[in-house]
Image (cartoon, rainbow, N blue to C red; front, side):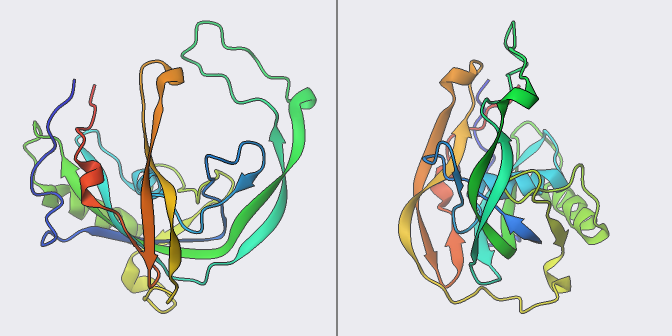
Length: 228
């Protein structure tokens, strides 16, 4: 059932939750590259949301990414990785087809990012039927980041590219975005999931990175979130 979005969560005066995520490698794959992976120069909003949900997630709220700051210079690296020629079968299908890993293994090229660090700022938007205040969820998130606790290790795009995370005030380097401007480009915002995986619909937007910061347009989150 669709419910209207909660009001006030995206108010610029409301303090966001923040975390710095960093790692040796990252790959935020462009969907138009079918065989060999090519990374966007920074995380997509959906990738940023997934990293925050790995740290703290509750069905009572969702994250609205406000901005993503690039804290280290953008550096691409070419990698060869072992992958499968087939996708993992969807367990929701009546007869998922098994995969013979030995027969389907292949090497593919990946144009990934190296030595990355990002500061992610997001608003917490509770569901309209949730009575708890936003501050409760914000405080819980900050405690988990401060203690290094997570539900599962955040990944920088690909699962094997694990991320470390910490509060912004504990980041060892300069806590300011790198002064880089990128040409506007079409970027994946998120995916509208359907009961039938074949009907999943990607949503895109034009990303503008100025002085190392991607500001995510708030209106992209105006579409109601689907809840069970």
